Length: 355
Image: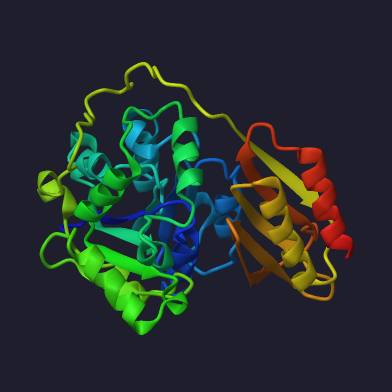
């Protein structure tokens, strides 16, 4: 790579498991210094906090940056370029940079940015990894909750493209160097074969697909692809639209936006994790929430319980121990359309804690 720092771009719709995949990469990075750039709408720092506090060797808190001012492909000049330049200019620059894009991002404009004069001599795109929700693909969708993703897209005022989700999905695949079919444990062998066949039809020749459970993929398959993707960015065609990086600001948005609320909910320790997670599932369903994500302190357990809920699916796992002097508390972020009864949501979650 001629001394350039490699960067891996991770794409995938809301709920596909991007943060979980990245955590697995960090856990098995063998001490490699990995910097993270995270661009996900509405998480209010929870994605970053989960990863920043992971306690994994090579995961330096100063090397985790969140971009929260909109879709990364539409804010390349304003946010992404200055951020990545600051990372490579650190006294101890990272060995590798992983970029977690919003599911709304078009990957090709981001890849093209690595040809900019201020970036091309210091960085290269090692590979673009597209993460897919396997069961959703088998069901004929692109993600578990298409409505949530569409509403997420309309909320982002920085978007300068109105790409339909089907075309956005195709663009992510067209740009990919590796496709990870996540949640493969929820598919039968025949179902996984059908998903692979469906996906393969939209890939460039030679692009591999791998199956994963809970985002667990061998880092050797993800980091070190050595694709030098910026060198053939135009071959990774955006299929149905035009999107210029020369424009630092997109056109005026002339369509209505659904409004979102994102709120942080602080709760005490929980006594019964299973009961609490059932309560989270109920709250998601009864109040029409799009997402709940965060961590919980469990009585008698030294480690944090990571909680991630999208639609009817509620996942959890223990990660690191609470640090000395760190408050043992439960912190969740919830996302919903404007109009959600947050007082009732908080009351229901407090009841779930006490149950």
